[in-house]
Length: 179
Image 1 (cartoon, rainbow, N blue to C red):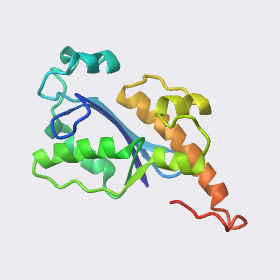
Image 2: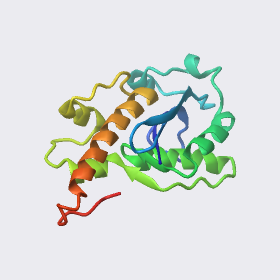
Image 3: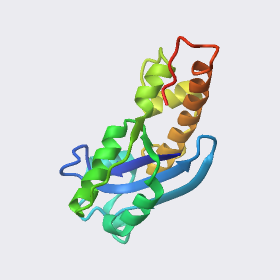
Image 4: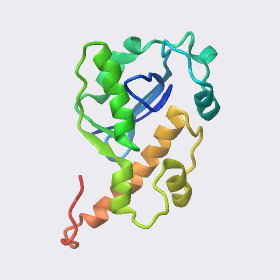
């Protein structure tokens, strides 16, 4: 069981930044079984360059729930599941930091689709989500928005699952199953 996640933030530094949007797709290894997406009021100004990148501005988040108001849903949707993201450490560190500010120790097993892509899909010039999706013919509806990027990551994850089944097949004993 997996929770495939993408977030948008106020910057790149998790210790000082805040989450502005989150999307979670629960996946059972075959298909999506649940989803959640929301803007989050970061309780700080969103820098101009982030608004330019994501399209998320202060006006859009002013009436959005604050992180503490969605924290329970995030816990419930990820409990007992592997936390999957493209460049997982970015998303995971931001979410852990938000929970730490609330006094909650958020710990999940993680899986990175960048690392898996490098192992299972070698030879790409870039393993950024946008370039990898272009190479694989995955359409991203809403690039640099949590739901769009998370859904693209789901499609990539499904390709990786199929590739892993082939590599992990008993007839191909020289390769190790990665998950």
